[in-house]
Image 1 (cartoon, each protein chain N blue to C red):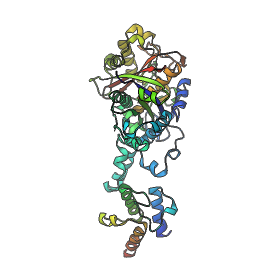
Image 2 (cartoon, rainbow over the protein chains, first blue to last red; image 1 turned 135 degrees about the vertical axis):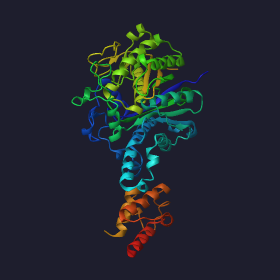
Image 3 (cartoon, rainbow over the protein chains, first blue to last red; image 1 turned 30 degrees about the horizontal axis):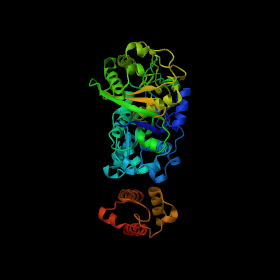
Image 4 (cartoon, each protein chain N blue to C red; image 1 turned 180 degrees about the horizontal axis):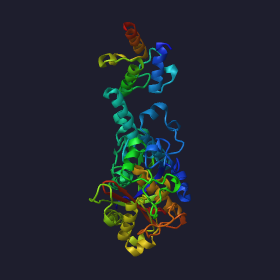
Length: 414
Length: 79
């Protein structure tokens, strides 16, 4: 019989909190983490708002030497991984060789890259720090987490822009089903708020310029949406073979039944017409999970607040579930309060979806006031809603045409 | 500030060690926990602070705090 995979731990650090539970409370109450940018001078950007991790001091988490030798994105990954690992209580119940790590990042250590590039230009290539490469590379978060928790099983990084941690979780589930390891720390992290990070996304005209009203700037599915808001943070889950989790008496948050992964093969940044690739991703996830459109009780949308994403994802959901079922299915975007955490987004949203199943609460699309043309689903606008749900999907899409959907199930005993 | 204190400060800053660990006899690898990349970064720190370049062959010989202090003192005398 195929192995089943469950979530036994969760960790999140991001714009709406420094722990998974704080993030969840703020997602449910619709408290935005978007403010005017502070960690990089916003004056020269068209988009001057961001979801920063508030009051963040690396020395609260790492000693001075380590803090200086890990990029901000790695810091977020390690903090989230430590929380998930402690939350799972797995430490003394697993062989180190049977514990893996898959942590994605869209960009990697861009803060480090900029800093050392400046030094090289000003003072010469022989003044580049010897730590530059092992700080900047986008797989080092996975490597560092492996060192930090002593996980000696499979270890790598997934890089698919905003779908990176969705892929990390999808692949991790498959790895556990195949029996490669018993548990995996899976997730993603991102720290894109730098001169070139913000500047680059501004030049794509992808970001909201609602600088005078940061807290409602990320408004997925709203007629006045004008782009996404860049955010930073990390999110990691402990995924575990259900038998292994039950044997050690672990607390189970939710089950991940399967996933779907597709490519638009259409355009580098724009989604395919009518969200064709995303629709196939959702269908494949349902097939992998052995469930049907009528089973779906909730979808945590990618919902970025860009014009193209939200209308095409809406179409994709209609294609995947059938129009009639789609109109009756609650769909929400928690990016309304977190902004877009890029490589960490898929994992944050998988965690919110798992908590929604566990608690019977649908987090709202907090900032949605007037649905945009063609955005006619039930987006759970404004306020959270109680709903006893059994099956849910979580979508992530990334530049490059990458689509991934995770299918989750409420855990209600074996 | 004495040469010793300047060297000690750089080591504390780069390696995150406690001042009392930085004795003249302390070995960078075994006593101060510096791996090869740490040690190279440290050499760069000395180069920047004292405005000189230490070639690789010389750098590999600078295995203790005292050896660095002596090396820099000699360099200083030469100038």
